[in-house]
Every structure is written in C-alpha cells, then in structure tokens.
Length: 198
Image 1 (tube, rainbow, N blue to C red):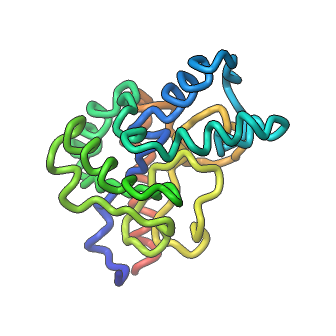
Image 2 (cartoon, helix red, strand yellow):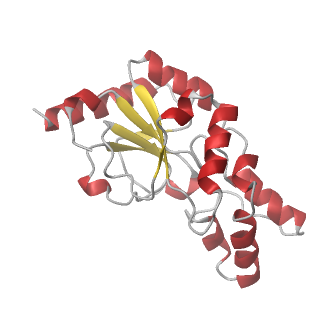
C-alpha cells in the first residue's frame, strides 16, 4: 500500500489481547486439565510461560489449533465502546490481526468472531496478515511487545497494556479501552504521521 496523508485517520486494531480475550480460554483449558494457570504472565506467547513443562506446551499447542477455538474468545471489557470512541474522535478503526500459524480455519473463525461480536463492518476491510508493517495508518493498537516491521511501518504502535508488555517504555500506551487518554494518544500519532508526509 502506498503511504498517503489520506490514511492518517485509519487506526489499525489488533484482535487477540486487544479486542478478543485470548487469556481466559487458555486458562480454562489448563483448569480443565487440573493445571493452575499462571496469572499475569510475563511472556507474550502463552505457551512460553510453561517452557519448563513440554507436556503443558504441547497441550496448549494442540488446543489452540482445535477448530472453533478462536470463536470461543470473550470480548475484552469496553472494546465496543472503545471502537466507538475511535470513530467519534474522527478516526476509522480497521481490524488488523496476525493469524496463528498451522491453524487451517483461523481466518474464517476470526471473521465469524468479528461479525458476531462487532458487526459486519469489522469484517469488510479486516486484514489478516502476519506482517502488519505494510498497511497504511497513523497508528496500530496492539498488545505485542515487538511488532514485526514496526521500525519501517508508517504507523505508530499504541501499546495496549497487558502484563507481558509492561516493561516496554513508550509514550503511546492505552491502559484498556476505558483509558481516558485514548483520543489524545491517537491524535498525537496522527500528528506524527502527518509530519512524516509533509
């Protein structure tokens, strides 16, 4: 995509850990197998938290790739209201999600999740790509501590706070969808984007 100031109003929004609660379904899997989940994990990848237990890692791997897993995610608190706040501030939210590797139905499941929880608008121009750096926008709201290609992307990453990214120092952070700074953070990212395209 060619970078253009016309896209300064686009805000890319990640799914897992930002809109969809990835934690609760995985914790439930472990509890169903008699395993106490680690609370407030510090590893971005869920399975890495259990690196000392190959059995637990294998369980997580296969359960995460079970058909229907991604459709089971609850909506993160305040997500719908947060997306509306983005619109009300004059921005256009666009879903941008990295699909799990080796999961044959993941994109279809993510599309159905979006339609059921957010509405058809969220599916129409949603992006499903493991490399988000090539999509034009002023910001990307994402919980991943290090987004692939971020150094060369047109957007500014807005860190969506989760326990595993608290160590990342950034002036662009949202502490959940009820954060009163949401509009201000996005506006600063837009101003930065427009300065880069003068």
